[in-house]
Amino acid sequence: MAVSDLEFIQFHPTMLFGGTGGRRPLVTEAIRGEGAILLDRQGDPIMAGVHPMGDLAPRDVVAAAIDARMKATGDPYVLLDARGIDGFEGCFPTVTAACRAAGIDPVRQPMPVVPGAHYSCGGVVTDVSGQTELPGLFAAGEVARTGMHGANRLASNSLLEGLVVGGRAGTAGAAHASAVGRTRAAAPEPLAHTAPRRDDLQRAMSRDAAVVRDAAGLQRLSDALAQAPMRDIAGRRDFEDVALTIAARAVTVAALARAESRGCHHRAEYPDPAPEQGRSSVLRLADDRTSVVVEALAAVV
Image (cartoon, rainbow, N blue to C red):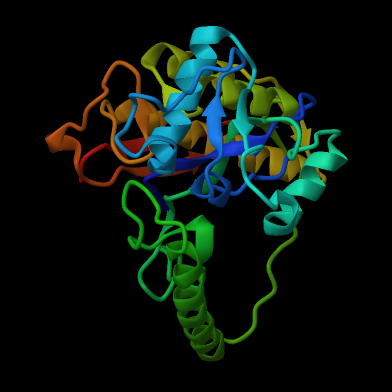
């Protein structure tokens, strides 16, 4: 079954930094719209001279600028200073509550933030009714690659895509089920697969497949995923770890193949778009029951 454009992962520029890992709340970009400024920990503005729109630049530009500053300074986060916004608590009660739950008062101190993985523009290839290459399997929303996003995502388009394709997939799925009748799937057999511990996988992806990638880091990541130890897979969390490993390998291969920067995919050694690569990547994954293998990749199709 084909998947496409998995290298295009949009990073939200301002996720609240907690220092202990795990999921953290996003700090809405509307705060920068009201005048908040991104600073490094030395107090220097991050977006000055980076883009004509400064702190209001597109999110992929802002995320890349934050990533570059963090790498240059060695700091684990940057600061979002909203102290100049009058009535901050009333305008942004959710952000205020999240910050204070983490021991931060955004009215009196800058918020520590980092870019965070936010949205996958690619996914399982479908038509506009959500039908995949596998008859009877439908996909909609972030898991699907319908072609409605390109190399980047406009913020509200995903909601419209989910509503439209989700509705069409439901209608098409019901028609398919009515035509073929009801069948019972066989229970999955216990298998052995390569799958690193989830925390290790998250750290490796954050290190080598985050906002700005390069060949050395992606190859290191690919090697690490290939060398993950075999595990007996039986429970739900085990199967989830295998699925995450498959997705990680696909993202890594696609990012290595796209030797350019386009949309939300940034390669350090290829900072500009390459016109000949201005098409979708396509991968097909095969499972030989003992390992995950990338069967084929066409960087340009």
